[in-house]
Amino acid sequence: MTVFSQIRSLFFGSVFLTAGFASLPFAIVGLILKGRPLDIFNKSKLSEANFTFLWAIVGKPSVADAKITGKTISQAYGVVLDLGPGTGYTVHHFDKSKTTKIFGIEPNKAFHPALQAAIDAAGLTDIYTIVGTGVEDSETLKKFGIEEGSIDTIVACKVLCSVPEPKATIAELYKILAPGGLFLVYEHIKAKGGVGLIAQGLANTVWPFLMAGCNLCRPTEAYLYGAGEWEVTELGHPEGTGGHEFITFTQGRLIKKK
Ligand SMILES: C[S@@+](CC[C@H](N)C(=O)[O-])C[C@H]1O[C@@H](n2cnc3c(N)ncnc32)[C@H](O)[C@@H]1O
Image 1 (tube, rainbow, N blue to C red):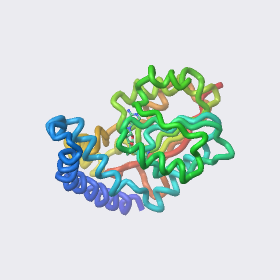
Image 2 (cartoon, rainbow, N blue to C red):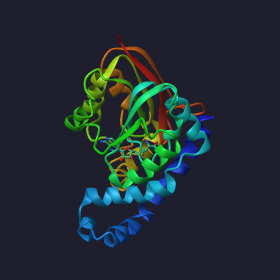
Image 3 (cartoon, rainbow, N blue to C red):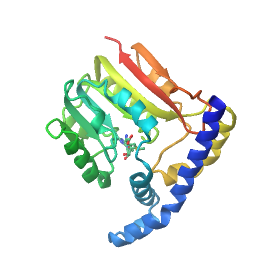
Image 4 (tube, protein in one colour):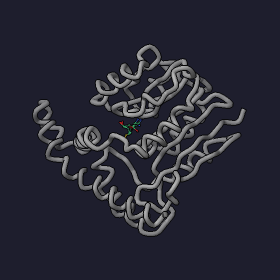
């Protein structure tokens, strides 16, 4: 089963990588048409433009992926920090009867119109606020009342791969979480070994540039476990996978010690 999932992951990962290269000309033309031709020579701006174009085309979750995301996000309750919601492919999974306020921390402003449309379509307009900054920008977060012990649930779906300083950021997120608060996770992480790990190492030479800083080789589980004391740590590989895939995921929840 896991051999099959490794082959499948190599195939889809390669497709995604190829799409990352193929989208570059479109990203370049897009920047020129938007009157930002000089951004072509700015590595991080070109990288962001490329990922913005790519994510709109290939970012929509598959049925299997949406099932895991739904299982993860629907557990959120109270005041929620939704990290990197992107174009809002996942916001409809929030259970409105359990959530009182949701802050969507999304630094890529090109995603905001689609994200707002998804929020409105999900009926979350009254409780969902987009915060246009990176999660590491604690000064801006404080202006929204997001500070130590203020958040009941943190949702991290395919975003901790992209934050600039994951270990330090996760440690800060631990502080923001209220005692007894829930940290929900669906993240791709560093493979345990084998061909998946070799492929990650090779792809990671270009992947962060093509995907706006996304890093394939992060030991995110270790960062989460090391962030502080937890009452519950339930993280594991989704069914049918074993941690050796090229794009391998961890999914589950942690509950902060009271
Ligand atoms: C792979 S996309 C995932 C989007 C969404 N979570 C989903 O599953 O459809 C990663 C998202 O993380 C956002 N992101 C990148 N760096 C971030 C940061 N420092 N803080 C918060 N979000 C960030 C990106 O802009 C992008 O929207």
